[in-house]
Length: 267
Image (cartoon, rainbow, N blue to C red; front, top):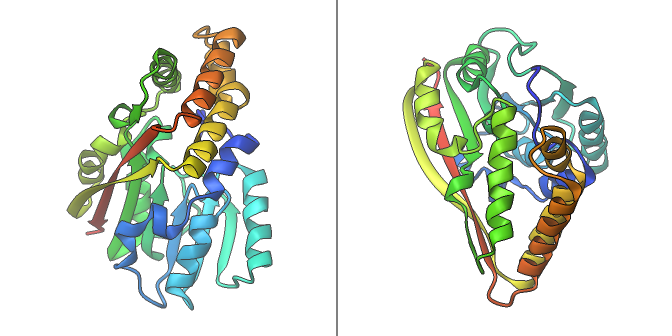
């Protein structure tokens, strides 16, 4: 993939990704997993979901693929530390997966399609490596469905900037609402759509989520690209970062992240 990843792999981004588990990020898929299945996790990042999925399908083999070599090294290290033997992590291109036709029973991709310029092409490649009757599971956020309180014009500006950056990158930040259409266009059948949320409302959850985004705004590729594209500057990004910390300290603060989910079958 030559697509530019809006988030990048700054520590603040990986801090968020490492929080993810099969339970909090792939619950819609779990009932369809069975011991012995061969599973591919596309865009696996640091591999926390991947390792959980490996436990669900053992002794089946799970392969995690990501474009970033450093994050694949981190995931491999975590697998060794956790003693998970039925998983391997590889650098790979989601548009040209280095696997044979029909090699997997399940293909999973979490928060991937919102970052690619041609999601139907990526999904078609996922279909190629699935056996007939195999299961596709994709989940993506829908940024303009997010809800938060208290309101703050600077958090509105955060979303406006995020939207502008992703569009400059040729990506769709509201991917969650389009999954059903994209999956059908890629040739899958029996497409079932659902939605779910992450909700940050407790003091602990607000502090974690607010600090993650306060750091991401200033230090991750989101902020770097916003400045590079002439959409913002360091002073504005600092103000948005402060707004995230201000939100995290509000006793009545709530932030709801909305996701679309699609399960489908390879014909």
